[in-house]
Length: 591
Image (cartoon, rainbow, N blue to C red):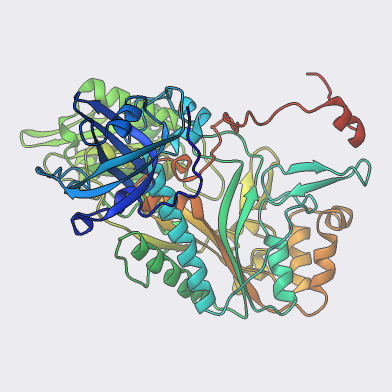
């Protein structure tokens, strides 16, 4: 028979009781975590979000409570009345280990089926099972800690933004479709037959309009939605810290974000200092082969094209440049390991991978017969290789307009080997501002130059004259914030002048009709005195993931979706009734 809670009031959370509470009466409530029956004595570990307390039931002194405790099983919901006493032998494994609660009364408030996995930090359950039973998975201590950390981080963000004079404004969730690089999630309108709202990929246009409105400093912790191709660690809905400022210099925005991140890291017990390091995009590509370089280890890239004579390039089918780096401790790699590294390189777009082992007994290379001993020596010296190092050089299978294809391949191998060889110092927190991005990138599918970010990104003033005649040379006023090889956010100083905005749209090949359809109301707003403005959006999920020491953003989102964008617990997405489709005038076309 289950009990009612009635007027019974909790006096303490389970994990808060300490030796200083000994002698006090207490009432705790939670779930049965573990049960141990020793006959005369029966122990229940009772758990809530703060932790676990051991409760002891004595058959001799409290027979009724002991009898009831015999009915309790794992995950039963209980309330316990009793007295806090010091244990004869403390348990150092838990914070409440110096005390136990001697029960005088037990209330069983609800029973429970046996869960599909134990409610422990370390479990072997598949992620699909955990997501299907998310309400049980969230009972575990680690998810509790992650969600509590997320709360503290978001709360600190709001405090900092308020202190810096920003006003939080909510922008619409139902807006119009303005493609920004990914597909929109569309919402059919019942009232306006055949028309659709779109869920926002970002508040980009609205926050710029808020600057036109004279708000001066806006921010929002906002949900965004992108119907992107499915990939690991992507969620169809995600959270951003979004902000915009009027009349800013680039360094003003950097200062705001650095203040936010220093404070947020402090909340997570991590000490970082500002200002953060700055690097140009082109240098990041050539030095690290990435637009989000991990600076926690060296192994910098070097262009070594001149180490490969023309006849060697012809035999190896090398087009474009060759990039290389030295991997400390890699000289001990076996032939099999080098073959696996070659396959990995080819899978990431390499034409070929070429190796030099620098060992105490001498230097050996897989390409010495083709490039000669002198060039092998030149290659090792260019990379600063030392005894015990493995020099890895790569060429790219296909060249990419506007960037260094071989460097991008080498960058991926650098990360893989840095991890495999233990070169990454996991105790460091390396922030980086990346600037000097190209305004355009080449689209192989469209055979045209397209916006690398979005079409409202500002243009470096001295590059304006190249907009029509050499778009590939035009630099943007965009910037990214990177932490330990992860992009945290992206932003820019925006285009605020209508004449420049029109020139950019023309450079992108957009017709007047396309412009009016996509951005009509925004283009109208630009004509009414738009101030210079700029902003940035940071990925809250990714920030929390990194500061919590997790490897997946799903671990810091309460109700995450799978890599197939499905909510297994709520069984979403799902089919809807024919009546609902009829009301919307929608018919499902069978594949």
